[in-house]
Image (cartoon, rainbow, N blue to C red; front, side, top):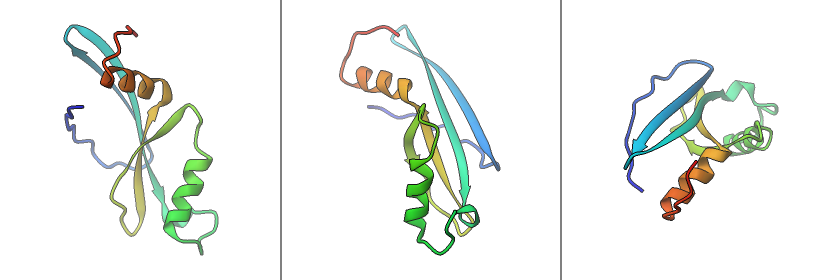
Length: 101
């Protein structure tokens, strides 16, 4: 699958991103969410950072799924989520599915 990079500024809190694309005449809406998770907010500050991310993902909104984990800093890790339904659409398109959404 081809990629198009769109720079998104790093802002505190949750960023809801809606993208509408038209590819070969077919419109698709994609919904992403980027959140910064701060290490100091981990429930158990003594655990390692990988375990902290596991806990975040295990308790995250079930309508969203992990899309990308960005480069962590000393303060936070940016995590990108995609709506589960949108991910299914993307996979169908990658496999050459002719289903219209």
